[in-house]
Image (cartoon, rainbow, N blue to C red; front, side, top):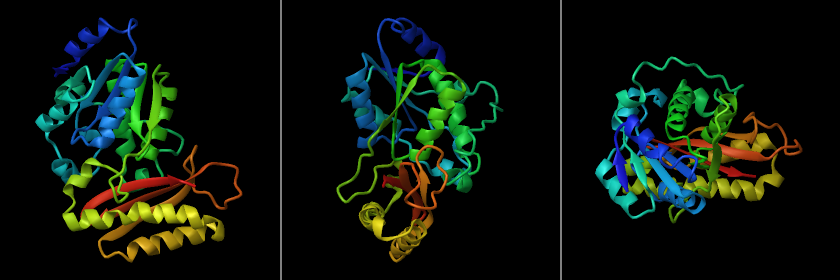
Length: 278
C-alpha cells in the first residue's frame, strides 16, 4: 500500500495502470469504520487496483463548527487500510484539491434541495465539487459509496451523468452496529448512552416498514416522528417517504415507484441519518 499526498504523483502512478488494469475508487473523509472497509473489500473483489482517498472536504460543510469537530485520525485510518487490499491511499492537503477557488454551481433538478439539501444549504454543491475533482484525478472504472447516504448517492449518480464522467457509481449496503445503528464516522462523537439509544432509529424504520400497509403515508410519517421523539436522547429533524428516483415526497402507497424512508435525527449534538426501502 502506497500513501500519496499529491495529485501529480497519484496521476503518475495511475497512468501506468489505467487502460491496462481495472481501477476501483473509494472516496472517504476518514475516521474509517467497518462500513468504509466493506466498500474497499467490494472494490477489491471487482477490480485489480483499489484507490482510497482520505480528505475532509470543507466545501460540503454548511456549519463551520461541524467541520472543526469532524473526527480525524489519519494514522489510525492508515493502519486499518493496511489490513485491506488497498493499493493507493490519496491523502491530499486542501490546496492540492482546490489550487484555485471552485466556484461551480450545480443544479440536479431538485435532488439537491430536499431533505439534506433543505437542512444543509450548499452541502450537495460541495459534494459535487469534490467528487467531480476526485473522479477526474483517479479516473476509475467504478467508484463505491454506501447507501446510508441515500440522497448523496442519487446526487452523485446525477453528477456523473451531467458531466458525462465515465465512472460507474456503485451503491453498497449499509453496515450496522449490533443494535442496528448505521455505522458512521460521526458515531465516534456519541457518548456510550447516546450510542445505545441511537439504535432506536433503525428499529423504528424496520417497524415502520412492517406496519406501513395499515397507515397512510402521512399517518406513518407522524407515527414515526412521534415514536423517535419519545426517546429523550433523540430529536427528529425530518422523516420523509420519497420516490427513490427523484427524491420527491410520495402522497400514497399506490404511486408507481420504489419508496424510501429517509430520516435525520439529532442524538445529543450529533446528527445521524439513515434510510429504509419500503
